[in-house]
Image (cartoon, rainbow, N blue to C red; front, side, top):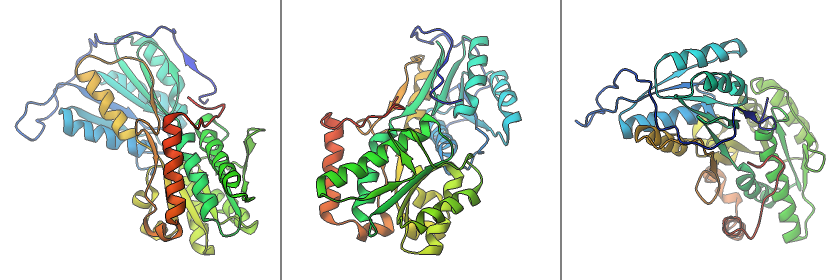
Amino acid sequence: MSQGRRFTVGAVLVATSALLVSCAPAPDAGDGVAASETCVRMVTNSGGLEDRSFNQSTWEGLQAAEDEFGVEAEALVSTGETDLAPNVEQAVGSGCELVVTVGFELAESTLDQAGKNPDLAFAIVDEIVTAPNVKPVIFDTAQASYLAGYLAAGVSKTGVVATFGGGNQPPVTLFMDGFVDGVAKYNEAHGTNVRALGWDKAAQDGAFTGDFEDINKGKALSEGFIDQGADVILPVAGQVGEGAASAAVERGGVSVIWVDSDGYETLTEAFRPVILTSVLKNTQDAMVEIVGDVVDDSFVNEAYVGTLENGGVEIAPYHDLAPLVSAELDAEIEGLRAAIIAGDIVVESPSAP
């Protein structure tokens, strides 16, 4: 199940302002202001809550919403496929006004429960489910990974970079499309021939580990890329990407571009020396916005689409590897960002939201 399979119940865009289900009042917001009576339940995918990816960033966003609106949020953690549907059912049974689910694994269960509970608001992160009461939270990550691809080509000493995914699914391949296009743009601008291993955009096929949890698979695949000369690697595979970071640390002279969250901040400190940047999804702000809409009865099912223009996607600071990025290269990347926002450059992908 992926964005390529649009999960649908009805196609009409409607407001879900009459949220008739109630829940127990949240605790005091902590500043003397009466807390909202709204509560939220989040259901993680099988990656767990602290996945250093969008389960974690979604939860951080809901925690921020607790602080801002005085709502009460709890997370139901899925540890495997058998937990998914029961956890969504439990979240619905909590009586909270908003249920947030994360990832393609939860699309079917979200659709099922949304159909059975038309007065309840749902949001699903990183997947499209079409129903009157479900708001997709999706990100045009190709825009930011285009910048990352340009950066990778610009800092590569070997003229070879690489990317791989956890599975051939639109939320994954969207990153990879933008990355290889950014490398191509650098070659066009500089007359170079930097090669991008691991993804053929025309064929929409490439290197995948087949899951998002087995770190050893990510390490083995990355070692293969390094053996072919790659010195910058973009893993789009959740926790599996830690294998790429481990290979980079052990081999030396290799850097990694993380995804979803800032890997320099979320990964173990041992990986900091190899994190060049990260392609960010600003899930936190999206969650705060959606909870605010539920609190003031203005929730609608129109998709939230994160872009460079609205700050929903971005690349992270270069941190310890900033000396690799010349002032000229950084200026070129800033120019590309401005051109994408202005519409002068359109980053295209069959997986674009």
